[in-house]
Image: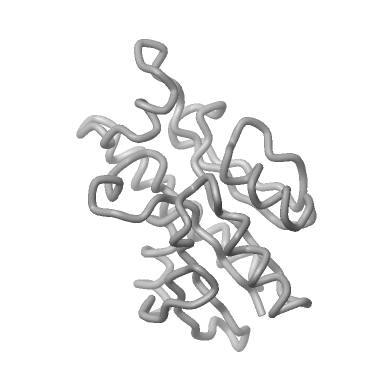
Length: 170
């Protein structure tokens, strides 16, 4: 089984923010794979299906970003042999740039820090660059709505992340 966890914050007010890019990737994968995210379990909204014969679980934690580890640890305990791929935004990468790692540290990302504190560093991750806005406080920036002029590059990076995930699943 492959578990794809997109990090974000629940609630309409966060829906189109930079910090919800992980949720956006999971939603896009759900559309592509015809998976309904309609079950609440493991402190998350989940959906299950198959891709090229492989069992897939799509996950959007409902714990808010900074407590994402509470969800992921439950998944890790239940599905011990599953591959876990976590998708997050990253202010340290230029807008639209992707970075894939098979394992590693959390860096400055609080959602990854939470997951690492619960299960360690042994999970795959895809970071999607959102850049920085030096004129704004970090929290204000990541929780701000994606501007119209940034939507194309962000949407393209979401599709690239989906393609990368599907490649990694084969």
